Image 1 (cartoon, rainbow, N blue to C red):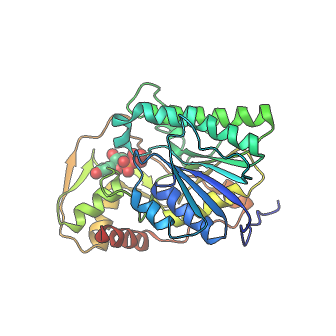
Image 2 (cartoon, rainbow, N blue to C red; image 1 turned 30 degrees about the vertical axis):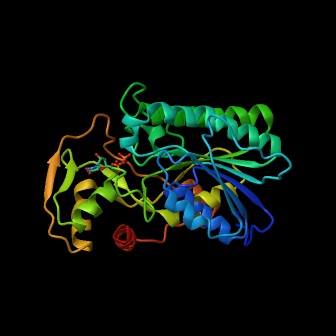
Length: 322
Ligand code: UDP
């Protein structure tokens, strides 16, 4: 099978990137700006950070529109657009209880608006889906052909089900209108530009460890996750955008840790004196999660290159600057 060839330059290309103020999208935006593309970022700052847009605004090939993409998109009349990235959804479990309807609207109505823009411009679209489409998986590691184990009315349903809908919408829209689409299923990702208070495990543990406070383990800490550093994740998104396969790709780092191992490793790497403390496990918290990334590796040279220790140190350095 022939491998994906990634472009050395994207000069002359225009990218619309929804959710640009988020930590993954802003890292991806910077990658595209450095490849020479013109990037137009969209965000409503519901969870994204203005500081991430300030970083991007230093590039003269960056433009930004503050907007709610599920209400309306900016007027792109007369502009050629090559790539549309759908990365606008809040994605942290703490957002699921505070922003459930916003999450459902952006992944349904927002995705539809971006698909319509893609069709109008003859562009290529990428939906940032999630490992959450597998729910609490009964298959391990998760391969793309696993159809999932999702509770449609549980605390994660607003995200899981709306991302499943976004995948169905993307696939149906592509078939009906012959639009060029891609789907990635993003597994746990961490790195600089994450919100320190976004409630996810890596920011929580790093911030607790840096202050020598107790590390809050939910449940017995035996549940697993596989953590990918943000630049490795963005390389995978870029790779899939340049593939010729419209079916979903798992992207992430398959190195798997229990949450307790993760806490102990962070204490060691940061030289912290924090102790572990145990809190109740949230409902429907997936027991095991690890991507099978054979599919992307069969069509590309993609390989995560940032190890967990290096990635944690870089993330801790970032939190120290805040
Ligand atoms: N978790 C934890 N302590 C925390 C935050 C999270 O033990 O302070 C656990 C959480 O219960 C889950 C895992 O870490 O099992 C990953 O949680 P996160 O919120 O980062 O994302 P998820 O993978 O659940 O979407």
